[in-house]
Image 1: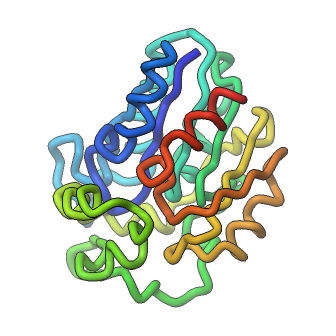
Image 2: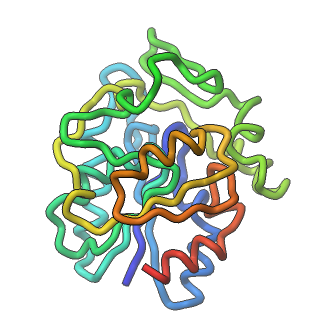
Length: 231
C-alpha cells in the first residue's frame, strides 16, 4: 500500500505540507509521494494567464498514480479534490480516496461551483495577471491556527500564487463515483466552513470528523495516519 497526497490551492512543496504524516506512515512501512502541481508554479512554468491550469495538474497527479501499480490511497486536500476527481479515474490501483476539507465534483463541475459567488476575504486575486494567492497576513489565522508555532512560521515559505484559471476549469471525470471514498470534515476549519464541508461530504461513501483546522495532517498527524491505516 502507498499514499499519494494531492495538495490544495495557493501552496507549493506538497511534501512539506504532508511531511509530518508521511514520516509517521513511513515508520509503519507505508511510503507516500506528493506530486508537484504545475498551476502553482511547481513545474518551472510561471503561474498566470496562459500558464498551466487544471489539465496540467491532472496530468501530473495521474502520472504519479501510474508510476506504481501497488494499491494506493489518494489523499486529496481542498482544491486537490478537484484534481483527483479526474486524475484518479480509471486507475485500478487506486483503492480509496480520502477527501480532506475538499470537493467531490460531478463531471463538468469546477472549483467555482462550490463557492457562493463572491471572493473569499482571505484571497488576493489579480485578474490582470491571472493569479490568486492566500493573503500572507491571514494565512495562519485562517488555515493554521491549530498548528504549532514552528509550522506556522515555516508555512509562509510554502505559499504560492496560482493560476486563476483553475477555479473555472471543469473536470472530465468523477473518480469518487467508482472508487470508495471517505470525507474528513475538519470541524475547526476557518477557510472552508464545516457546515459547507458536511454538504460536500454527502457525496462520499463515508464521513469522519476531526476537531482540527484546515491542515490536520500538520496539526494532528497521528490521527490522520490512523485514519489512513484504517482504510
